[in-house]
Image (cartoon, rainbow over all chains, first blue to last red; front, top):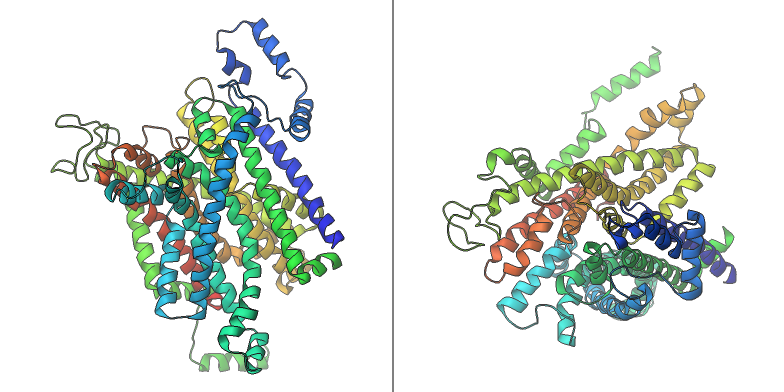
Length: 311
Length: 309
């Protein structure tokens, strides 16, 4: 178990370093330097030099990168916003809980809808329910949130007047953003759960369980569902990542005050420490969530663990 | 010719011939799939609209007709789908939007495919350290969820002091979208190349001294075309979606070009009174993404019937 854990961690660390490096490099591709953006084009060379020094921009770029990483790791400091008198960490502290809540409720929604639908579709394979569910699934997989979100607003907020158009003040406000963000994941989970359960239902051990006298219902409940869920667990990780990025779009549609909305707003203000910090944060969370899922998978399914340890 | 071979040949010709090449066989299966045919027809129509938008569209995409009434306005005799908040003809913009969507998708997918196929072939065929290094790079790209890297790249690259020149703007858009997609193709091609490189026909080619470049392009690549075509078709859907999403967020195709994503965003403040402004680009976008997704699935089924459930 320990070897397995260490191996997984050893794989994640270089990825984290590479990701932070990539984000750092991308920021240097900007056509205007941060100092130019802060001071405008008419700044005196002295003022530029002074600010360059203050931000450490006169140091070699490798040193700048080391500083950037060190500040994040040691002080949780992602730099300062250009457009506000705030540190990026302060903004993350304020906005991230909102994004996390949105992503979590969307994931919960996707699981609560997707898993039972997928399981029922597999159990009643080729029934009308299976066909209808899969038709909805393929449609939902192709309908992007920039289409689904506005359509839901048009129907439930503007036409029917049941729900608010935008905002994040009360639990009622969270309904449309959650559904918009979670719909695609729900569809993907349903499809994956269905094929996974169909696979398990064909296995010999299930036939054995039924042959031994277990009712079909009990056999499915006790043996099939658990084993069918295991592979689904792995897509949950990638799905959560998609939900985090998806929240950039959904937060913009519904004006939800999370890190996505803030990042997109920062684009027009050319406030790229904010965009950079929040992108890196999301990427780090994505890597850690997938690491967590990998480890959990190893804990639940000993076969994965022993395979790794032998390799 | 030796006698046994001749006898065998005669035997074969005596049997009714059933199949032509695998490609033709796949094409036959594809034509029998009604969903695939419907998607193909839709895609051809979209392509037609994209190519001939300048002849089909009654107005230029940025022509502002402010002659009568308030803006935006519902459909009338002059404007089939009405006018948007700037007085631009929605139907014309929809047609030009197809051109933007498909042009971006084609360019980006070609970039992706060239990078992905080359790196994947090299990694899978040579293995060893090259493979390890290339796969580490793709792992890092995969560590970015979905569109995040494209959003970051566009946000940063557009942050210049002056409005960026149009050509630079489009180049960075292609770059941002292309860099997100190639690792998927690279990983797929690498896996397939890895599985094929120890097969007898490759070994035979090596044994008679065929150069590596020839083995890669003449022997490996043709055998990988099926999976690559499937992946590329689905990537077209992905790129169209990504471009629309970036344009929706204001970091996609620059104005005044009509992108469906931008049209959806522009429609939001007016959708209560003018739902058509929202519905028209939404439907176009969703249908196009769906058509390429379905066609990709159908292609996979046609190329490898064993995968079908």
